[in-house]
Image 1 (tube, one colour):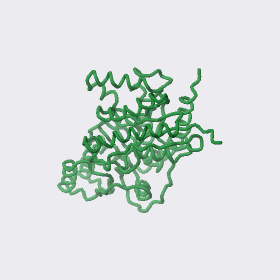
Image 2 (cartoon, rainbow, N blue to C red; image 1 turned 45 degrees about the vertical axis):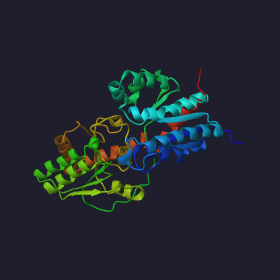
Image 3 (tube, rainbow, N blue to C red; image 1 turned 135 degrees about the vertical axis):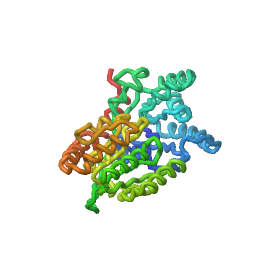
Image 4 (spheres, helix red, strand yellow; image 1 turned 30 degrees about the horizontal axis):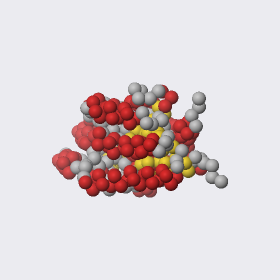
Length: 368
């Protein structure tokens, strides 16, 4: 007889290849399935990045159908715990809330998960009714998972400390062999204005003006909007940045080969982040990282140890750190070694599974 507790995992699956979808896929395929009956409930509605956050009658109708399907699945499987990722926008949270309320109506335990860090900023800018609705909805949950200790404060007014759990992203990777020998800087994220790819291009130009161009910048991702795409591509053409290569979204072996072929990883968002998967992937590939202080990034990128933390929207700072890493092989090697150690210690799949297992067991069978 199977006595394993049953846990519903709500969430999207790729495509599109965005952090939350990748996380859901990894959890479902992890060793957690040996300890729990993991039942996935796919909440995916958007087919691509561009359609995310845009309302339509078709998407609203799909959401209503999804709630009825969710109730049917609860009756079928009788889960011991339901994991519900929540959004940090008003429209997104309104879409997520029925999962929580329906689960509690069926007397099921619910734990929510935030894969970002903009929750408090959103609530502070929202109206009083939205704040009231969020507070009432969260009272129907048994706790929350955040991606780093730096993010526990987001929920300190909603939960006692013991009900705020920290589970950083973690995964195991098959590391590809290097295919080239030139210095390569990698940017791997969707080309959103909030990710500040334009600042990285400005940093490359600053290096060119200092006659430092003995490296290749490889950037891979999906374009969010035509205006930002034109802005970046025109900048590359205008300033003849011949050492910049733009690639479409990559996944699987092709994606990991990009990381394997790189010497430095640069990711400098100017808006709140959670714990980006690309940071974990960069550490797994022993890459020094240049990043900004957003979300839980500074719990992975330790300034001066396995990379550098630079101010947001500061191409000059990015250029300075790139120059250090591109011109000082010994320094680059030191940070590379620490990056790999940081990954092995804190961000493997085994560590993430261990953390999630503790959370699930605590919520299913809480101690007195």
